[in-house]
Length: 347
Image 1: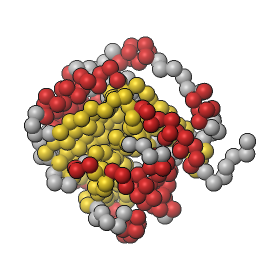
Image 2: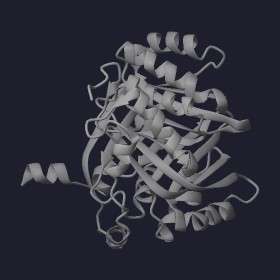
Image 3: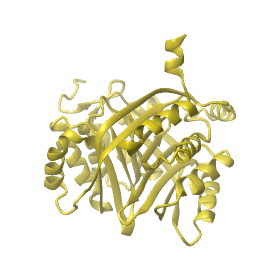
Image 4: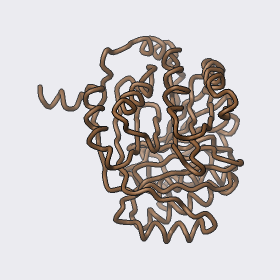
């Protein structure tokens, strides 16, 4: 079969099935992410396969979505619900799957194509999050096949030309291996490559859920046509059946971003926080052990660095902070985690 040159070429597609998702919102200004979510889950040894968070958006609410294995979903939901009481809103979604597309070089057109494909598939997305190497979506498991079909109309994959070929190449879950690895606790958590980016804008806006995917996808593809990179992106349920979306671009491209957002999402004025900085790292056991997000959040809280936004997608963590907090954040993270890339360079 001759390849379709009109499709966007990407590196691959992965699906993590048999999951559960928990969405929550809390009044801003307190340590809800640490005290109400990350710490209780760590104490219960619940692994997180996905975490997205936006702090203090639109009325100073904090919005968070996390995913676990299906068997741990009710336990995670119950713990967060008990913490929330009457002050927060918590909902459980199961079963879910995480679909991850592996793009190149933070390209906005690939992120936009991924989001537009989900919109055209008419699937409900619980959350979106990006990492330096991928963009991921949390969906209801019943919508998986429809989403994959649409992705193949926009993207060209190197190892499979059709959804049937993709499914035929999927390996069964290695549950026993994951269970053994999850029981392994390092005294100091190992990471690779703490990367930092400064002089960024963080754009945040809230739009109706039904309009999110088509409008956001079109806007990101337009940014991609201008070669505007998006190193960080999250989207998750917000107030009044709306979605909150936050993403970063270089502060030097502010004017272009304003123009394109007004063109593609004209009725929703975005909030802009600038300057912000982003930090990225991944680790060898991130997808298979608990407590990593809790370690991160506690370390930052200990030096009074507030997270503006956060995403953890299986093996990568991306976080956005105010730029003034960058030196303190880098210092505490290098003290808290063991960077294997630096250790290898020094050996």
